[in-house]
Image (tube, rainbow, N blue to C red; front, top):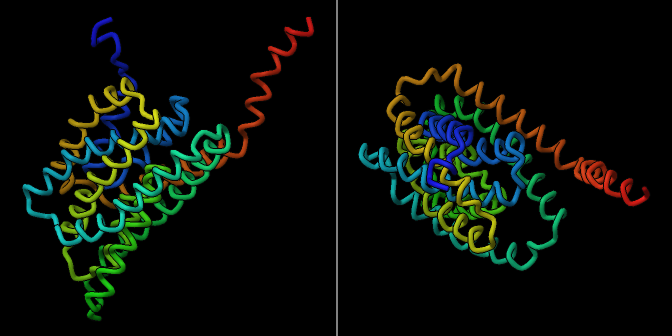
Length: 284
């Protein structure tokens, strides 16, 4: 079978849509792609998380390249976040590798974690608009220790969240950074957050790949759409209708969170229905 035989147009279109959202808003990688794979395409939670992490890493390389060319990356923030996120991600992956083969229990934990983080991300997207307007209103000067400690702690929390669920580096990271660095231009905060997500998702995705949680064919199909999508979204970001786009994105995240909570709380029912026909055949 040739290369074209393995191309799935629906996966490519999903990658295009999510990549465009990442370019437009800085949000949408793990927040939208993982629930999309689980709910729409029926991919297992572990495989969806692992595949999405490498998908996000490669996709955001293109996005961070655009921000880098515009000099909208604050590298000291990237280094501080990485100081917390990289060790936290490695430790989380080691724990998952040692206890990851517990079947349905692991699937349930991932789904609940993902749903919870999506709900928080939805709130962060709504609150981010207000923070953007008032980011420069406060005149209080924070000590360097508070900025550094808070940024490292934020990185550590995101490192754990991203490794478990692939969600956390987008809207939540930007929202907290706006609080920690209220005088920094918003464009530099968004660019720094995207740049930090590249090594973090690459490390976490590689860990999931080693554990066998990455579907290479699925990853390729998603990237076929996402790479041009994120480039298009990055160039259109200055013209994005913010008043429409952000509430719509928050609504999608909230609905995805609710659906994942429902899915996480009804796995046994699905299994019983799948096993029942086999048992009936044995009785006959």
